[in-house]
Image: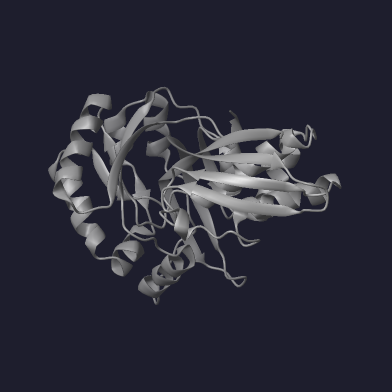
Length: 301
């Protein structure tokens, strides 16, 4: 049986600036995506003609992943088949390494990997620009799952501009039990900001300079996440995890995206190892992992 495997990375937002709520229910964003070395794999296997799409999941938190057409990988396969005019007869097997509902775009990574794997399985050779257009219809983070590296995201996050970084960075991630709903975190952000003037989001010049220089300490000083207060409001225990990382000398501790994963920037690989051991010993989170960044976007394995 023909099987094609694609791998896509998790992300952390180095900047996540959220504008006011728009009439269409969305927010304008300015974000800086950073692809980190935690991955999901999507195995695409040819199914019998007329079988349609089916889905299975292995790996961490597999019981939290939907197995029907609400799954982003399923939707990606269907969207690509519609675009190419082919029958979507495929079984997708997702191997999870990215936390589910953890603010690291695991579902979006699955969608990006499914696009690459199915494109290969069906021999389509779809131009990358067209894959990016399909990705943008699936969700704001899916195009970055294809892009990888470090990139500025504008609009709802789907309009990408590459960012040159001069160095690799080391991160430690504290993965929480359970997830947080992204819509719920945005709603809480709106509630907390009600009655206050909310400025249009703008890109951080100092963060761009720090990335160009490759100085982890300067990057740390300029990390920001407008959703962090909302995530902590919904999950107060995150404040203890963030504080613990700072006690253990992380350069900076932030909530990753909409949470509840907490991200800690380390000085180097050795510091990341020491930090991960210390955080693991504290027993405040489900598990602790470390990863370097940036890494490439979705690609065949």
